[in-house]
Image (cartoon, one colour):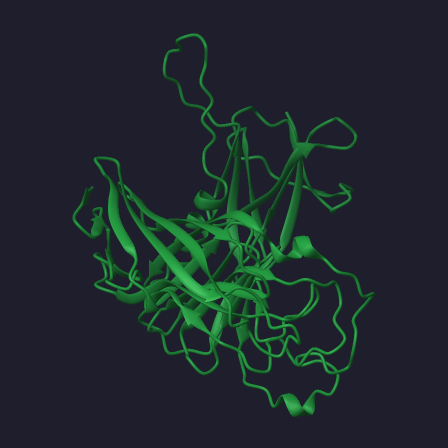
Length: 386
């Protein structure tokens, strides 16, 4: 691990802060370079809590229009970090008629800490926004350099492939198609030689820009003042619900966002497996609990599921209280042959329905493990009695 005036790096990755506050990410193992990541975009939003809508005369502002403050705040040996502070001057609100953004300006303060740990394959980001601006949408943007209009997004039990077309909105008299799309934990892009994944905590909306292939925008804030508007450009069909002012939906105050950048080579057969492992590690990190008394170092695991990119969905006592239920899901398009191993010897095991109704007995291997084949996008539940 090391950090210089405007860079940090470990054995696998290097992050350089550009003069404008965006960053360049280099994958040292593959030679892949991502030159323009993590800059901020602010535009008007005169929509409501249902629908994004822009003012007729919108104004867009970008963090690279100003000069940020950049400093290395940690330099190893186990972790290095860069801090990048922006003070974006943007319209303070919408105009009174909501047809444009106001002439009055205010400062939007954004502080980002970008960190690397020793041996890590991803770059973790923590962005803090001090928001006093109204009627706007703030997004963080990643120009990946990947020429594609296709994304892969994580959903509760699958990774779905999406194409992002451009629409003729004149063909939609009631509501324009949304250019944004949902995700649960990550979105990934790839073009055969270069891959990039954005892993998020609680940030469910992204856009792969149609007119800028390979440019991802992650929504951080949508700040609006009403429950349901009547005159939205993007919803010409009228109201979506009751009119009600919602001042707290302007999202005043301080907000902290966490996400992670993961570069990968998509032509590698193990790329999806490595991505799904990193997603689990970022979203559900190890929980460290201090003990009062000194203990001899020991290691044990109640349950082990392999391969690691098979997702553990549930681990619970069975409803009849006679065993343990384990549920796994396969988020990929290929069948996974898995091994589920317990620390304790298994007396009996069955595959079950989601309601825990037993389907058929399973063979127990070596006294404490069972093999399970999980179909593409499949869910499998088993019940074991120790």
